[in-house]
Length: 169
Image (cartoon, rainbow, N blue to C red; front, side, top):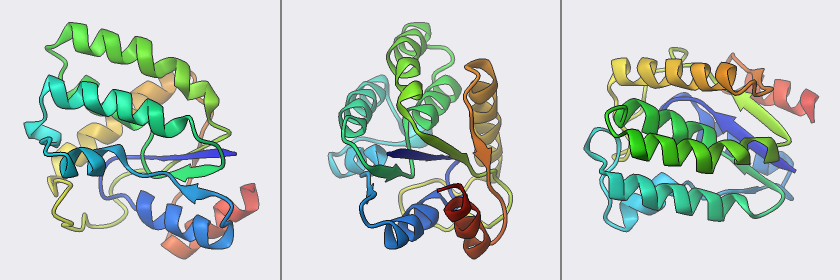
């Protein structure tokens, strides 16, 4: 099973993935490509480069080849960030779309967490810019609609979110 939890930065994806992993330990948590990129010395968000995004695309595809995982980032999120941050780089957006969109059908369950429910925690990796979060959230919703991706929107407290997901599983 492949469970993709999607949403902008700071919406609780990691928290939900960790909760799912506790109740379903056979679903390992997929490493987050962005955190791996940062450890490798790449800049993220507003300071990301085309080189960073190409590295992220390759790493995300590599990570998603595994089975039985829950991910707090996936190809859907990655495409949203690329479309938003690099709208002026047509060749990158075109490459990302051609490379990532076919991967969307590999997910058994897509869980969308909307922005605005919780304050963004500053973890030293993600930006705490609320406008950026809302903009990415809109881009994710656009991608879901454009590519007709089946998803479940989950809201509520972390405990309520987990219960909703457990009912789906």
